[in-house]
Length: 362
Image 1 (spheres, helix red, strand yellow):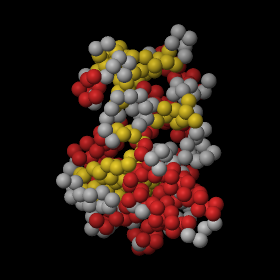
Image 2 (cartoon, one colour):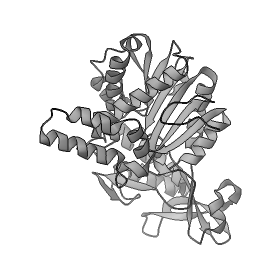
Image 3 (tube, helix red, strand yellow):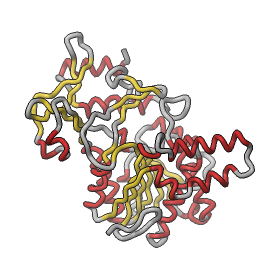
Image 4 (cartoon, helix red, strand yellow):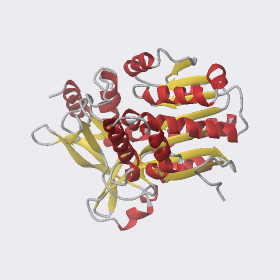
């Protein structure tokens, strides 16, 4: 039994069942035993591999998009270029290299920011970026960034923000809780109080008994903070994650450890807990702040940004093994059976500003 599991059981014994969102927050962010506070989960030796770790092409194309967004908004200066939830720092490293080629002056004049809540991961990022020519600052929240135009990217950020779950029980919807069974093992239960069904998606009206709906107010709140900052001071944002383009019914909460799925309740603090992101809900929040929100699949976005062309240039003059590795990376990043369809993209732009591959909102 993990130390965190012991503490969660003691907590439930003392106060009763806890909501799924609280369980998820404890598993991921507990100060002493949380998943992200105690380990470096990324890469082949960790529990999962993110797009920047698959190929440098991902970060290069993200940088090109951010640069185009900066140009489309009038080359504002001073400017902050930031990454939120930056993992090991690989994406920012690739972005900085690409931006230095596109516009060397920008590297020297822009402020670069890493928004990271984990001191452990911040140290890893500092090592990754130790030789970067840019001025990079670390922040625990968006609030401490300079009050100036912000161009921000987040890759696999929102999936780790805790989600609430509701289950259809009789005529009512009840919050899904984590409690203890007769053997004092962690189990899911339906909470005592019912929830107003108007808070749920339209699909919930006809959902069958036992159906689960996920709502993520913490994700919406985070997007609202980002959108408010861009709306007030200018800038743009690009967010990539796995999820769906419209809300629906279903349990997407999952645990991942050593590249395999496991029981969500089995090893608190030892596995990554995530759920699919409702991109429609994030887009609604963006538009409520007077900004344009553009949605796409990751595959479509990367291909239209020139992934195949970039792969061809990287492979030119390379040996057969290197070319095969590049081809595999393209398939993983953009293939419909890999990340291409499962992962979605949300671009946040000032109203009426067009940045390829997105067309202006009407």
